Structures are given as C-alpha cells and as structure tokens.
Length: 331
Image (cartoon, rainbow, N blue to C red; front, side):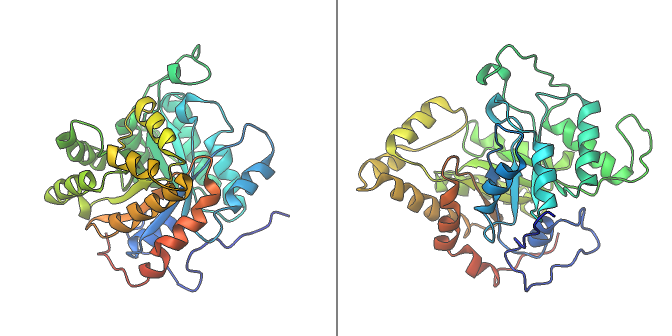
C-alpha cells in the first residue's frame, strides 16, 4: 500500500476550501490564506521506476507547499510531468503539473488536464516551452499548436465553463489553479509587467519567476506590477536558487537564455572561501530580501542537482517561522 506522507508545512492549521477557490489544493489555500508560500522543482527521472520519484520528493518533506514536475525542461526527455504528478498525488504531495506547448496539440493538452485533475492534481503551470534545438532530440518536430496565453485560456474555459475549447460540454470540469512563468530580469524590462498583465487576463492566478539574483531589478518590476494593480490579481512567487561556484554562475550567464547574474554576484562567489556554501547563503539572502517586497507571495526554489540543500535554505531563511504572522488580503 502506498505510504501517505503529511507534507503540509502547518499541519495544525486549518486552511479550508472557501468560496472563490478554484481548486481543493493545499497550494492555493496557503496563498489565499496570506501565507508566504514555498515551492520547488523535482527533476523527473530517466526511468520507469516510481521509487525514484518518491526518493527525490522525500527530500522536500515538511519544507514546501507544492512541487513542480517539469515537462521536458530544456527540451530533454524524462518521465512525463503528468505521470510524476500522478505518483506524487498518490503519496500525499501537492504537485504543480507543468505543460509545455512544444510537445502537444490542444487535443492532447486538454486530455492531460482532465486526466491530471482526475488523479487529484490541482495546480497547472502553463509554458510555451523551449525549442527542440536546445535539447537531446534536435531532430524532433515541435508542435506549438498553442502558446502559454492560449493554453491558459483553454484551461480557464474548461474549468469555468465546463467545456472543451471546441464547445463540447464536459461531464465534470477540472478544478485547477492556473499558473504561468514570468521573467522580470530580461530586457526590455519595462515590457515585463505588461506581459504579466496579459497572462493574468488570459487566466493566470499565480506566476513563478525566472531566477532572481538582482533585487533592485525585482523591486523595479514589482513597483510597475503594483502600479498596474496586478499584485491584487495574481500571486507572484520569485524564483531563487543556489549557485555552486563563480564558474557555474559565469557558465549559466553565458549559456542559459533569460538568466541574469550581475557581476557583483560572481565576484561575491569568487571571493568566498567556500563558494558552494556562499551560493546557498546568497539564495537565502535573496529569499529574505524578496519576502519584504510588497506583492511577493512566495518563493520558488530551483536547486538543480542541489535538491538536498532545499531544507537548509528554507530553515535558515526563516520564512516558515515568520509566515504565521504574515497576512494578505483574500483574493
């Protein structure tokens, strides 16, 4: 029998499903209760063994509100997001299913949304997806029948109108909390909040940002977000992650599109006695500073190949001990 894990960060707290909630999921309830939410990513295995999924997820027990299951990240093939989410749900975790428009047309996508909801998956992150040329199957044919905007619209229509995009009625609508990605750290900076507004209009209820290593840029972005009133319409989780070394940071800056790492960060790592430990401390600093910015509702910790560091990052950042006193308007 599948072991049931209690991975709620606040098991003593009652976070009820209230009128206006889109899903029964714990992640949405945490956000709507005004708690500072914590999410992370699980690297799906290159395997058909479900035990590998559970082993990887167990690292996060008691430290996160939801776990992203990536969908062919970087156009590399792994166990599917819908399968990982189904396994995580069986074990009591709260997964966020990523859907990349690169690989599926609207028929397959709508089927996955229904199937995931039937398995208890309450959260969906809508992504356009990386091009196949960057992955391990460059000969593959991209689909891109949809982009993140149209995917959000279809998901919202299925949930709110109980119909497929074609107009055919559903017997039971999927109860899902819809999200998207955002990148405040790539030019043109002034356009980024406006693009967020379009995603919110399409149906995004939460967003997870690209890695943040520049608090000043984040503050400027959030000022524009507040000017547009978007902080009242969408929950924003800032992306953070530990850097293993200055060399790693330089490689990421040069080779990973959309990731902005300032010179000051690389100098800080290069000057540290233990660069890996300094990278963890940098991540903690980013979380603490971001949590003080009005409109930031949580953090998304992306610790690729450093998943074991997530509990330490969460503990040392103090965000769990502080969040009981943090309140936000119910949206």
